[in-house]
Length: 294
Length: 253
Image (cartoon, rainbow over the protein chains, first blue to last red):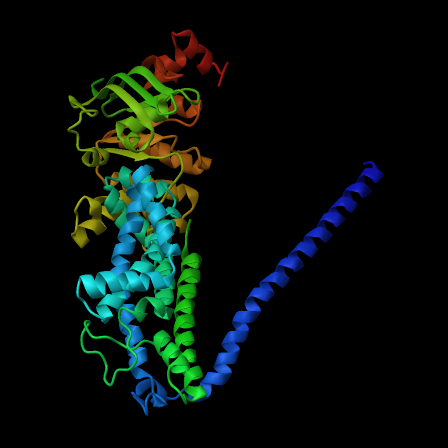
């Protein structure tokens, strides 16, 4: 072999590798910059908030105009809202996702639906709040209630659930559908027995991420279900409720003389809630990936 | 003896992209034999397979004309129950595509969607089908393992077994051994030799040796037309049409 040619080839490879190295380091650096603020916020809140955390804080009603005692009604309220949102958004979102991924053909009608879903995802959350106020609170007469707030949050969550369901279904190889039909299955039987179970981890991840966003929102529940203070826990879906995000807003801006520790403690509980859900979603995803066969 | 199970007359298929896959084909699939449809790629064999079990319904076919008579009934009629038809005409694809279920789950799928709920019956079907596809001895202790843990050859026999679990009348195999090693290929061919006592078999072979080995009857397909049809012996030893002669002699592929 021509030695000059060999050298030239090697040099070009070296150069290319150097450029690649620089590129990789650049990307690593940028990644670090995006991770640092999140890490900083979490660490800061854990340090400031953890002294407030105690069994009493998590399980007691507030006292002294919320300046002492616990945040139990806000925690349970957030659970109720999450459950209510799940109740409405999961079945609807999955059904819509299945329709779009499996049944809908590409025509003007389905394109309109897709645009609507994308737009829905881009609507500011306060607009959802006002919409919920108009439709559920006033028009349907559900009042300021868990029901109204859950429905409002559901509408906000739906785009996430729909698009992740559709995405998850589409990632299941098409040939399984053909095989299902060839074995005498109907389209729906094939979806139910093969396609949907395969897509389920992705669907569940989407649901959790959607709910997590809903749980952390203040604006949509501001006019539809959240209340400043409740001396007792809500007893029916038509009761108003306290909720963590709104409670944080209240105790950090509306109550004079609020101990800073309680504020950080409440934020910590909300963050733990949201990050916990995120963690669950990640675990489901990585487990499913390890189990995947195709 | 030569009683056709399926009688195809004037079958014409055109896809949405304008391609005419079949341009008026007559073809008989003879009862309790292996009937072979062979020829170079693009001849229309796969399209014929897809029309037979109506999987063409989900492909981009624009026009399908002609008649496919099975036991006197035209399978292209509007009122044919497609789901039931796919149970009567089982198909094995060129590549093993197990469903992402267990070994047993793959076989149970067909009977289950057909409404079989009896657990004991289902277990019997699984064992029966696996034995028939000559796979039972290799997997009887791995029934609950993922189907994808089997080797390629085993996967293809699993696909064969799950199709047999439908208790079809006709078995259609579209190049079933093209992704398999010689040993697995032999196993499938041995199965077919035996199976024709019970089933009517249409085989699209993956090479000419297989075609000649397996064919009781054979039709030579070229560019959407069936050029010549006859017994295997006649087609491969004594073909009459020039195209068939050239192809069988290996003058074009």
